[in-house]
Amino acid sequence: MKMKHKIIATGVAAAFMSTAAIAGFKQPAPVDVDLVNRFAQGDMVSAQQAKDDVTFIGCGIRKIDTGAGIVSTGFCQAGDADEEQFTCFTQDPELLAATASTADFSFITFAWNEDGECTRIGFSTQSFYLTDKMVK
Amino acid sequence: MLRDGGGRVATQHKFFQYIVQNDALRSISVRSARQTPLMKWLLTLSAIQTVLLAMLGLHALKLDMRADDIADSVKRLDMQMAAAPDAAPAQWTQSSSANVDADNIRAIIREELERIAADGALQNSARPAATAQGSPQSAAAPAPAYDKTQTLMTQAAIDQDLDRYAKRGAISALEMDQLHAKIAELPPEARRAALIRLTKAINSGEIKGQF
Image 1 (cartoon, rainbow over the protein chains, first blue to last red):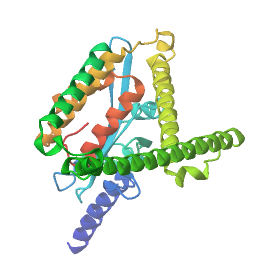
Image 2: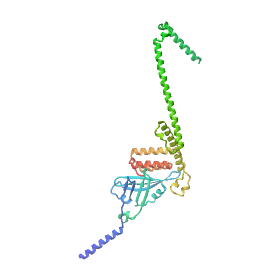
Image 3: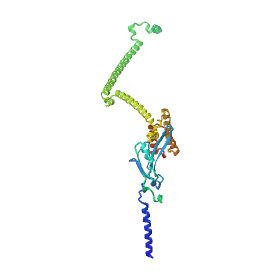
């Protein structure tokens, strides 16, 4: 009887271990806004699941047809748990192209200059930013 | 002239009538007349007038000397600028008259730079919008023309909006969209300036809202 329990317990443990192995490597990146060094980073999943109502991160583009042509303005913005937040904008063609390459649940990093213009926009879409709940 | 001459004669006539009618003066000689109160008063006035004339002359002399100084400074400045156009003359910080000239020169240079910048902005804004966005399809699109008056009016409207949102301390998503639509109407440089102002207002917390 005892032997049977041991076998069952071992089986259950093995099942849990294999589940953990299936989930894979995780590396959540909580949002951090560094106003001194003028950059912000974090992944959207961590931001969305933060236990506060101030954390967020994202980038976007507005394309406006003025009648004389399409005017595009890109922007990135983030706020962290310390309630530090920043928004930068860009009209640079390369950075606008980078902004367009965002994906769901990406890790985002951006930097800005003294005028609030974005000087760097980066995205990284990796499995380790996804949570267990999302993959199940 | 005739009227002036007649007037003078009439005045003299009245003056002599006064002398004749005055019992105190009727019988006195010219020498004793100098000692009358009227003559004393006239002599005093004459002395004061002489002193004032002397002071005026001195002041005019000083002004003349100063004008010479200014002329010399201008000549020196011209020579220095001709010799070394890039070097800032030492007189600019030493002579007040030269400072005036330097200010004038700076103002002229500033005006010229502003004019060149404005021309450049218009030329830049005349580039196809899609070229800046790296879209080959719209690279051949006609250059958008920006009317200066319309641009100024749009800028004024944007400034007014930003002031209103700053006063309220917040901007809604709809208002942000409308503001961006107005900003998009501006030429590139003015658009950039408006976006900088908006971004600074949001980042400083003056206006709460999201892009």
